[in-house]
Figure 1: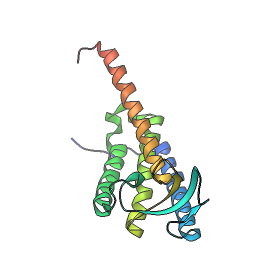
Figure 2: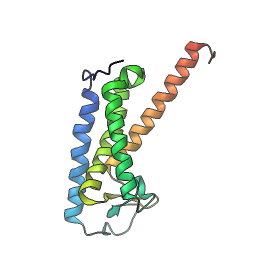
Figure 3: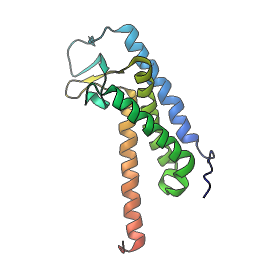
Figure 4: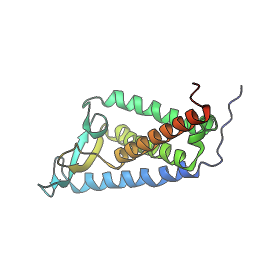
Length: 168
Protein backbone atom coordinates (compact mmCIF):
# COMPACT_ATOMS: atom_id res chain seq x y z
CA UNK A 1 0.00 0.00 0.00
CA UNK A 2 1.43 3.34 -1.02
CA UNK A 3 0.52 6.55 0.77
CA UNK A 4 -0.08 9.53 -1.44
CA UNK A 5 -0.56 13.05 -0.12
CA UNK A 6 -3.76 14.74 -1.23
CA UNK A 7 -3.42 18.52 -1.39
CA UNK A 8 -6.70 19.10 -3.24
CA UNK A 9 -9.47 20.65 -1.25
CA UNK A 10 -7.31 21.81 1.65
CA UNK A 11 -8.46 25.43 1.39
CA UNK A 12 -10.75 25.42 4.47
CA UNK A 13 -8.04 23.77 6.58
CA UNK A 14 -5.27 26.10 5.41
CA UNK A 15 -7.46 29.21 5.54
CA UNK A 16 -8.34 28.65 9.20
CA UNK A 17 -4.65 28.19 10.02
CA UNK A 18 -3.66 31.24 7.95
CA UNK A 19 -6.14 33.43 9.85
CA UNK A 20 -6.11 32.05 13.40
CA UNK A 21 -2.36 31.58 13.96
CA UNK A 22 -1.34 35.16 13.04
CA UNK A 23 -4.32 36.61 14.94
CA UNK A 24 -3.40 34.53 18.00
CA UNK A 25 0.25 35.57 17.82
CA UNK A 26 -0.56 39.26 17.29
CA UNK A 27 -2.91 39.37 20.30
CA UNK A 28 -0.31 37.64 22.48
CA UNK A 29 2.40 40.04 21.29
CA UNK A 30 0.14 43.00 22.08
CA UNK A 31 -0.46 41.64 25.59
CA UNK A 32 3.27 40.98 26.19
CA UNK A 33 4.25 44.49 25.08
CA UNK A 34 1.43 46.44 26.75
CA UNK A 35 0.89 44.61 30.06
CA UNK A 36 3.18 43.55 32.84
CA UNK A 37 2.90 39.97 34.08
CA UNK A 38 -0.17 39.57 36.27
CA UNK A 39 -1.70 42.91 35.25
CA UNK A 40 -5.45 42.99 34.62
CA UNK A 41 -7.43 45.62 32.74
CA UNK A 42 -9.81 46.57 34.16
CA UNK A 43 -8.45 45.56 37.59
CA UNK A 44 -11.82 44.09 38.66
CA UNK A 45 -14.92 42.82 36.95
CA UNK A 46 -16.59 39.96 35.11
CA UNK A 47 -14.30 40.21 32.05
CA UNK A 48 -10.69 41.37 32.08
CA UNK A 49 -7.56 41.11 30.02
CA UNK A 50 -4.92 39.57 32.31
CA UNK A 51 -1.36 38.73 31.26
CA UNK A 52 -0.52 35.21 32.47
CA UNK A 53 2.29 32.72 31.73
CA UNK A 54 0.85 29.23 31.34
CA UNK A 55 3.28 26.29 31.51
CA UNK A 56 0.46 23.73 31.52
CA UNK A 57 -2.38 22.80 29.21
CA UNK A 58 -5.36 24.80 28.00
CA UNK A 59 -7.03 26.96 30.62
CA UNK A 60 -4.07 26.64 32.97
CA UNK A 61 -4.52 22.99 33.98
CA UNK A 62 -1.48 20.81 34.78
CA UNK A 63 0.90 23.71 35.43
CA UNK A 64 4.64 23.06 35.09
CA UNK A 65 4.10 20.44 32.39
CA UNK A 66 5.74 22.54 29.68
CA UNK A 67 8.04 19.84 28.31
CA UNK A 68 5.31 17.18 28.24
CA UNK A 69 2.84 19.51 26.54
CA UNK A 70 5.42 20.71 24.04
CA UNK A 71 6.20 17.11 22.99
CA UNK A 72 2.53 16.04 23.10
CA UNK A 73 1.40 19.07 21.08
CA UNK A 74 4.14 18.60 18.49
CA UNK A 75 3.18 14.94 17.98
CA UNK A 76 -0.52 15.86 17.88
CA UNK A 77 0.07 18.53 15.24
CA UNK A 78 2.09 16.13 13.08
CA UNK A 79 -0.70 13.53 13.37
CA UNK A 80 -3.37 16.10 12.43
CA UNK A 81 -1.39 17.24 9.39
CA UNK A 82 -0.84 13.60 8.42
CA UNK A 83 -4.56 12.86 8.69
CA UNK A 84 -5.39 15.91 6.60
CA UNK A 85 -2.84 15.00 3.90
CA UNK A 86 -3.08 11.21 3.85
CA UNK A 87 -6.10 9.99 5.78
CA UNK A 88 -9.09 12.21 5.25
CA UNK A 89 -10.31 10.21 2.23
CA UNK A 90 -10.68 7.26 4.63
CA UNK A 91 -12.62 9.32 7.18
CA UNK A 92 -15.44 10.77 5.07
CA UNK A 93 -16.64 13.45 7.51
CA UNK A 94 -13.10 14.93 7.60
CA UNK A 95 -13.23 15.38 3.83
CA UNK A 96 -16.09 17.86 4.18
CA UNK A 97 -15.86 21.62 4.56
CA UNK A 98 -16.93 21.37 8.22
CA UNK A 99 -14.48 18.53 8.94
CA UNK A 100 -11.56 20.42 7.40
CA UNK A 101 -12.56 23.57 9.28
CA UNK A 102 -12.83 21.70 12.58
CA UNK A 103 -9.44 20.04 12.19
CA UNK A 104 -8.03 23.37 11.00
CA UNK A 105 -9.21 25.06 14.22
CA UNK A 106 -7.60 22.39 16.39
CA UNK A 107 -4.40 22.44 14.30
CA UNK A 108 -4.21 26.25 14.31
CA UNK A 109 -4.77 26.42 18.07
CA UNK A 110 -2.15 23.76 18.67
CA UNK A 111 0.32 25.56 16.40
CA UNK A 112 -0.36 28.94 18.01
CA UNK A 113 0.39 27.60 21.48
CA UNK A 114 3.39 25.60 20.21
CA UNK A 115 4.94 28.77 18.82
CA UNK A 116 4.75 30.22 22.35
CA UNK A 117 6.11 27.05 23.96
CA UNK A 118 9.11 26.90 21.60
CA UNK A 119 9.88 30.64 21.64
CA UNK A 120 8.98 31.59 25.20
CA UNK A 121 8.87 28.36 27.21
CA UNK A 122 5.26 29.06 28.21
CA UNK A 123 1.94 30.03 26.61
CA UNK A 124 0.59 33.56 26.93
CA UNK A 125 -2.98 33.59 28.26
CA UNK A 126 -4.99 36.78 28.65
CA UNK A 127 -8.75 36.34 28.17
CA UNK A 128 -10.04 36.27 31.72
CA UNK A 129 -13.63 35.73 32.82
CA UNK A 130 -13.69 35.73 36.61
CA UNK A 131 -15.38 32.30 36.75
CA UNK A 132 -12.98 30.50 34.34
CA UNK A 133 -9.18 30.15 34.00
CA UNK A 134 -7.54 32.59 31.59
CA UNK A 135 -7.12 31.45 27.99
CA UNK A 136 -6.20 32.77 24.55
CA UNK A 137 -7.42 32.64 20.94
CA UNK A 138 -5.49 29.42 20.26
CA UNK A 139 -7.25 27.70 23.18
CA UNK A 140 -10.57 28.93 21.81
CA UNK A 141 -9.76 27.43 18.40
CA UNK A 142 -8.88 24.09 19.97
CA UNK A 143 -12.10 23.97 22.00
CA UNK A 144 -14.42 25.08 19.18
CA UNK A 145 -12.71 22.71 16.74
CA UNK A 146 -12.91 19.79 19.18
CA UNK A 147 -16.62 20.43 19.81
CA UNK A 148 -17.26 20.56 16.07
CA UNK A 149 -15.26 17.34 15.54
CA UNK A 150 -17.20 15.61 18.34
CA UNK A 151 -20.48 16.72 16.77
CA UNK A 152 -19.37 15.44 13.35
CA UNK A 153 -18.36 12.10 14.87
CA UNK A 154 -21.71 11.74 16.66
CA UNK A 155 -23.74 12.68 13.58
CA UNK A 156 -21.76 10.29 11.40
CA UNK A 157 -22.02 7.49 13.96
CA UNK A 158 -25.80 7.91 14.17
CA UNK A 159 -26.06 8.04 10.36
CA UNK A 160 -23.94 4.90 9.97
CA UNK A 161 -26.09 3.09 12.55
CA UNK A 162 -29.27 4.17 10.74
CA UNK A 163 -27.85 2.99 7.40
CA UNK A 164 -26.58 -0.22 9.01
CA UNK A 165 -29.97 -0.99 10.49
CA UNK A 166 -28.38 -1.42 13.91
CA UNK A 167 -26.49 -4.59 12.86
CA UNK A 168 -23.14 -3.56 14.37
